[in-house]
Image (cartoon, rainbow, N blue to C red; front, side, top):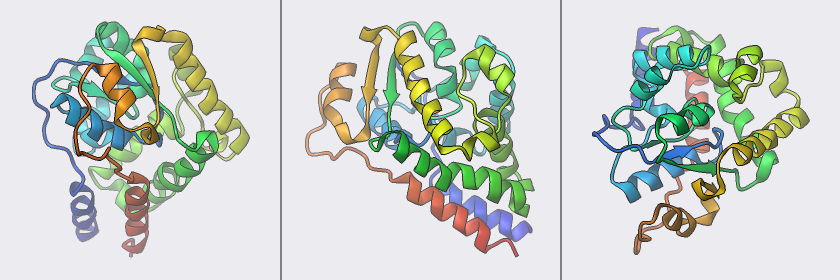
Amino acid sequence: MELLGRLAVRFWATFARAPPRTAHFRVIGAGLPRTGTSSQQAALQHLLGVDVWHFESCVFNNAQHAGWQALSRARNDTLLRSLVAGFGGACDGPAAFHFEALMDVFPDAKVVLSLHPGGSAGWYASTMASIYDLQVNALSKLRIGRVPPFRGMRETGMATYVDCDASVALNQRRFCLSRSDWLDEAGSRAAYDAWADHVRAVVPRDRLLEFTVADGWAPLCAFLGVPEPEGTPFPNMNDRKKMRAFVLFLYSDDD
């Protein structure tokens, strides 16, 4: 068991982010997980020269896990500010679910609504093959899910995305589906579309960019007012394959 934990940590650590530098918070990612957020993070870091928060930023940080779980129950702007301190922006969950609070805390920050290039169908297929399987099956049923830091990863993922408290989420206008909800493809895809509509309704048009990673550098650079990188391909992190490989690794080593 101890060896399995060390191997899994080493596997995930190859993708871990460096500690953040002090930065002015400039970009709020309001797109759901599995909408190219890893590529978006890499692109923003390249353009802005600062670290951008992503779920992977908190994988090895128990205080981050505890903080996001607390925010899933009640809004606390002081706590939210502390969780993204030192970063120049944030994307992916759970930060994306709190985009309205982040807009209040950082009134000059712009908002990027990342969308899956394959629409709701592509997003759903990607989520079920990666996050859902990781949380509901691998981390919840295998022994590795009880080993730090994967216990924190599981608890945060379940509380904020995969099996969250719908009554609390409704009060906070957060995206939330239960485990049984996820099995209803039509309902889940409708929730994806409803979330995008909610972001569009809340964020002023001059503060919002709708974006897919297939769009490349141009719209993102124009929105942020920075030049397009010459000779640099737009990041394609392809983290669905990475996460799927991680899930299969956990299954294969649960002996």
